Image (cartoon, rainbow, N blue to C red; front, side, top):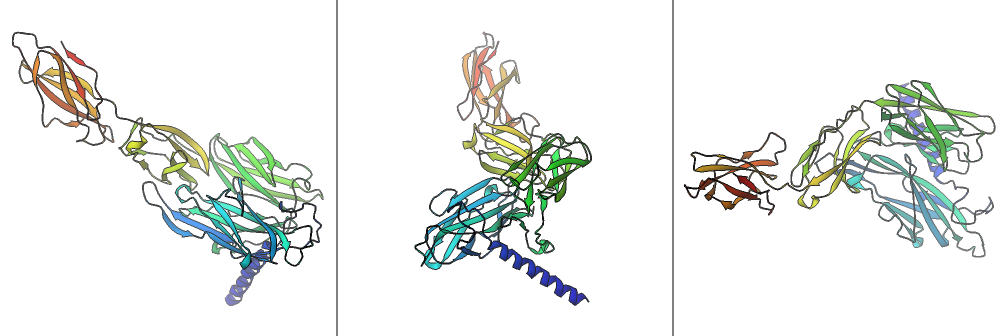
Length: 482
């Protein structure tokens, strides 16, 4: 019996893969490349992608190197028949945000992320992408490849033949899985493809009217805005629905929501409840009366204000306690413009600015469920000038000590000197053994240096003025001993 069950499971897996391959060959109604009014019986370009899923997988943490575990960046697509006047275009859609990038084989648009190359002599098209490893987050992208051209041997044809196919790009960071649902827009707009890796073998294809949120659970801080995307299958939202799908809270606190269609996807936005979890139900009704329902939950995550240093200096490593909540979809990021310079998914976030970072404004962001929960700007400061903190009596009445506070990344750097401006003082010297931290702050950036001056004329009052200078040439205010 066990062997029979195992054999049946293998058959089901190969049947799913076979159906996916068939879906990839189905053309869209409007390719955006040829004549939109072409008749349904026109010749079709058959496209055969080598892969239906390309994955880039990395491991990283704050202060450590990025470890690329896998990076599948090239897909080869065979096409038939041979073509002349061929045009190739691809749209790359971020499944979660809906952002779309369009590229083609004749321009450099989007070349930093992906590129297309047609090789007519071999009857192939190559798609290459460059995952942004240094700033990468877990994401799923749907690539729709569209081709038009005149079949060779049919040069009298006035309308180009059309063809399309789809495949998936995924990025995975620290084993945090991205959304896996990808809608394939075939000729009937009713098919859905899921990741068919080992963890998803139970998923199958459906040809029925359905709606499905991109995430079953949304996590957000109390009162914060959240957003999700709901895919619609078996209906064109622009013409096949009676009205805009209804959204209601079936469990938990009431959540104010707004909804609208963006292209073929329903966008739902709202605010997280003050506490607990709310279950939201979405109902869509097709013009034939058939309904489709789906639910997702909005879970409130309790957060605290991150602990960020009051001052950050070049050359000094600082740390931020992001106080990440105990959920998987939480992370902290430090950015220098568009560049991510530090990252943490648990524990402390650490970063050491260089001297060239002086004056820059860094941006700290805490994310929950890919939404910014907290952000704060951090100025990288230059060290303050030294300060004459105190002038006090020395070992006898003819000696006084000048206490100078200075600022440096390390104990022995940027040490100050002292200059007598005027007055009844002489024999200025630095006292050894007095160099120490000025306070208990961590990291230590403030230090104490002590200088000794002697009375010059015993018959005159022991008064003078001094000024301290650090190695960078910055000067303290002039201090007077009256």
